[in-house]
Image 1: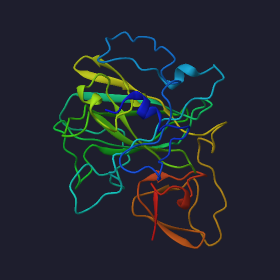
Image 2: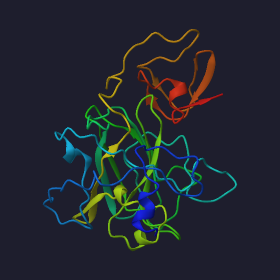
Image 3: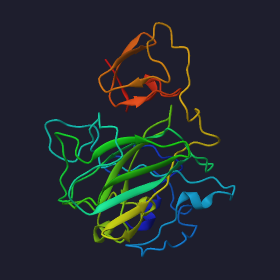
Image 4: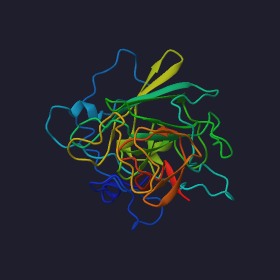
Length: 288
């Protein structure tokens, strides 16, 4: 792994990709703020360590550092190449089933002012217990939306290891009408954390053992200052001229709408919100 000073040299105050950096480096922020606060120890023993959570900074009046962008170049899917590539059209679900050690990952999506972001899209994908990805179907792939308090919960398994990478979970997070954050979540004290060139310590989850399974916590911080919008409930708006898209409508994968004289196909089932207009959310709508 690169020395700490080398990692700090490539971080800044955004959680979006830096297209001017070649290779697998990622753009993000210093972990200083996220590691400042001490997490109150849970009743069950911690499996690894206890990185701080963004929620602990509520009431301090300080802006949170955004969650770093972290990508290993697997987006979008390349049909001719096998590997852990991102796939659109993942099912709307928060439970990913399969053999392995049970794992739940829960947390919140915040803006930098520590305000919760409702209706944020979270799209997760990961390896199975043997370190393999399902590139033909959607095993261990699924998306969900944060609730009115910005909370999310993923029920899955501890992902397996595969050559060249440490243990991790992929995720894309997007607030309505905002850029997509592509990043990864890591497990503390994994031996391969020290040799994985993509690993960043500010993306460590809190993980503890509960019975035969694991529980993990992580708070995403999107680069949004002030009170997030839109409202956490669907609103009815006047559709654009000649457009059929409407806020409040429920869409299924494959549905087509028009918006501002352009046609879009729905990629993932969802309820439309103001701010989720097709041109603004490529994770949900594809122009045809």
